[in-house]
Image (spheres, rainbow, N blue to C red):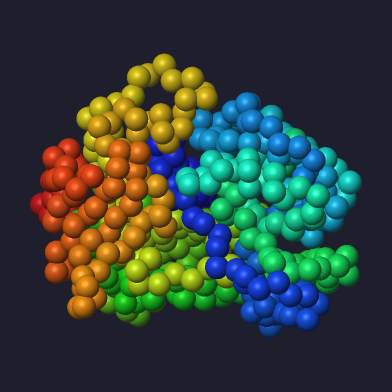
Length: 411
């Protein structure tokens, strides 16, 4: 099973992940070798992005053509490719269009003029930011939702990009050396799992998984990815890998699946099953050079709990049925409910009590004001306020979500 097999609404509520945490001091790339370029025993490096291109920006236009219901791109950035460090067009097996037709595409090459379709980002003037990058060669690594180049139109979130030479000066020789480092890939599925599981274990320690898996954020409404029922029945596929973390622990089954393009991992999902209970631990693109700590795990848990409650409100207030393709967006779906659209979990803040450092709330800014999830001593939500006032709609939706959990798991 592939991560692409999500329902439209579930896909729309995918958690947006930012690509920060890179060095800030400018230096010469020739004099440094970051830890992410450490070579594995077979000579490859763990670089979980299907594309890596050096380019210059030519012009910026509004994104007008929405090809998919989940296409929430804001701008089309026309660029000229100066160097191809990794080409991400799937070549190992045919690609089929939505109409069932085989698509044969020409790989992107140096000198090509292509379009980067960049998705919207909260609290970022995307046009202003992109315009500031003109006249300077950019080197971006990223992954796209599909394994083709879509007629040389590559769609991704700008926050999901990774800059190998962030705040560094670099030469053509540096590009050649990095391209050479990226050329080897692991073809053996069992060996390919090892760096993925190392990444996932660093992100999700046993302690974090144990603290994340609470009664009030058990999965409700949507299907787990990977699905425990189908996990043991998976047959080997060219385009994904799968495995189990901490098989000898008391956590239950911690299952993961990763999409791949040309044997390169690009995105992953992790679910946990303990008895009848089920949690969606994570579902994301891989991120190099980004720290993930205990506060992040807490923010993600509270975000997910609120998201499930928002899903309950969505069911109670479905949108109009005649949405146009352009209207199929996160905002269009969530605007049908009384609850405000929430930002990504990374926009949340952990609030602590002065003096003791005790966690008392997790909060964020929304279109309707400041949302605060007030926490009890076990760090579970005891109430929700909007703009400083208790919000009855949130409390009602949280209660409804917990009622559905009780029916699903506790009977």
